[in-house]
Length: 430
Image (tube, rainbow, N blue to C red; front, side, top):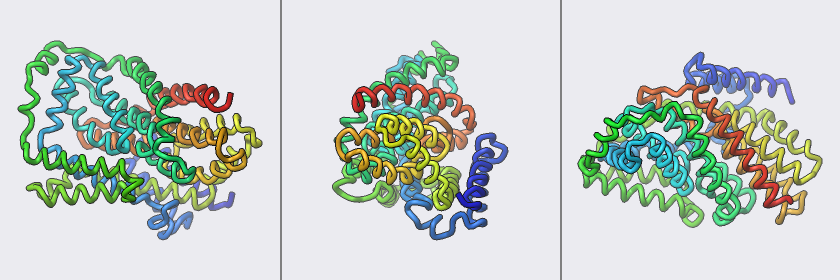
């Protein structure tokens, strides 16, 4: 690597250390790191703002913006209060039952939507129900972020890295259902067991609070039925358009912005009210993070690391698969899994072709997908859903620190990736 590459790596590590230790605000650390990358010419304006591989991923930014606006409008209808009461009553006020219900809803929705959209929809419900039952909200939010990453791995549209992998590998929606979904069903069951252990101190049952919840009528929570129906119709159309992306060829970001625009234009909600719920610090943090990671791509740092991992296997398919699985999980924990997969997918394509193309060599694509998707759970910045959840928590006055998330995330990642190892070995290699 060049001197510039080493300097860029040092800048990234310093910014990451500031984010991890929370010495400065994560937005300041990300923007500061991005500014230094531009200052030292590790990247430039063209690469940082306009290149689809090394710049800010505007599709992610505008997808988030559009969905945040839609969720902001939905919030005014009272539907989140309705869902909170409904969920609490179905769980009979029992904290762990409630977490199971929320995790299953989150994982299932993430398989059909993208995981970021799902956590944007489920987080307001979580705050309301935890407040009603006098529960700490942080464990529930952390569990939902991780469930969204695990559940999203099941389908092509569930997690942005899967879309990149499908495009590069020529894989279909059904390919992901056949090869990824069976594993994800098992991992969700394992994850629920981990939740029971990891968050055991948070499951304090309050019979008085539970009795109050059971006495409530969730239908009374709906404040504006007309606005609710308008919002649900727009949201349903947006979801259908997400699923039909291979047919319609509209990017999810475009669909989300169109949905947000139609909703604001067709209802009585003002522009100010619509954008009041937008998590601007989260969007800015993503921009800074994308620029920093893009600089690592530009200077060849990520490419060198990825190639070193690939070359260390000496062409052995089994060893390549395991190194790709665990290496992707480790790197996706540190670098957002979207730019990581964008960088690694051309290398995996070459490895697949070198091992015969179709057939057994396809396991390399599934190793990359599983490692990148599950590795995103390891740290607070490993996946977009994690960053969004932390931003929402901070906005609502219950901040989740980097290490509060990460100490649970590392355990979940190690267990789920370890469970994935025999799956790949037994199904594809033995």
